[in-house]
Length: 401
Image (cartoon, rainbow, N blue to C red; front, side):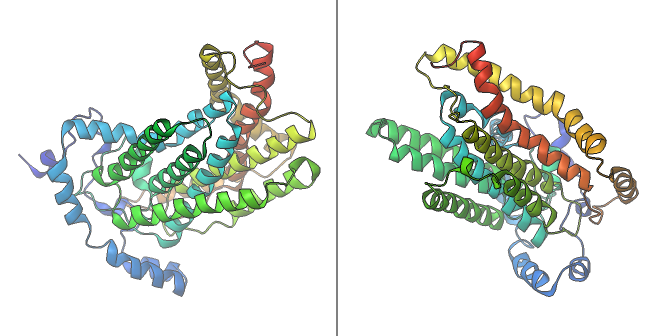
């Protein structure tokens, strides 16, 4: 058996997860001169310090991975990693709102949104590589994920923040008994351990990535709880300036995002989640101005079958907006109505020239129109869930009232 055959995936029919031996195709692996010349002194000093934890990790991680790999585990961890994927959050994050748990969705939006942003910011700031493949074998169903920097792990940040949030709500619940709280806690911990251990098993992250990601998740959870208590009496609808502030703050975070040294797609997730945060805030502001409760009568009093109806209709509305309507509507508004300059052609040409090299190219930049467009596309998702779906449910007579 050749080395390539020994590293080929077992149990996955799609060969996308088998990486080329040329590690220069992946960001963070170039000679130190590239980073020294492209970074400030402080930034480069931080990267140099942290590389002592990443330079020699691959061989030990490979030994661990090789000792534990089986066909079943390959399949299990490859598919459970989707529980923290982009599409999973788009389609599943709104679901608690369909049973009236808007407060939980709000907390998750803040925790996930800022976990993604902070982990993406530090990824692009530190420019640290993932564990090398080979020797590690990368098991992933998301090809672009392997093209990101390594630390911090956004999967770990998300999983940590969400797990703490679920445990917080579980043990503060007045309706769950001791058995129910224990059962929900075990499920939350299984979810957490599966995602975190899976990142190492799949060859996607090392210990520094996992630990720094988990720290971000804890910080975002703690910040959300603290700010929620601090602003518990704040009424969005009393302030006409709030939606302008929310949108301006979100776009400021994105346009002031640190520039990575090499091309790294994680910034796209930051744009999406900051857009969702702003869209959620503006939607709740509108509902308060119109004196409409944000749950829209979406409780479960009518029974489980009505929740299924709302689930089908709600997810269909989100998918219709995200994959059919949003891009055309948003870009037509930005380009034809607001007459914003379209800087995509020049960026596309620059990207095409850079990608001719057989290695990860230097970062060129994102078209400004794409940042704004993606921001508003994802801002439209909470608008659909909170503003469009409730009257639609009422029209279809599938609300709780």
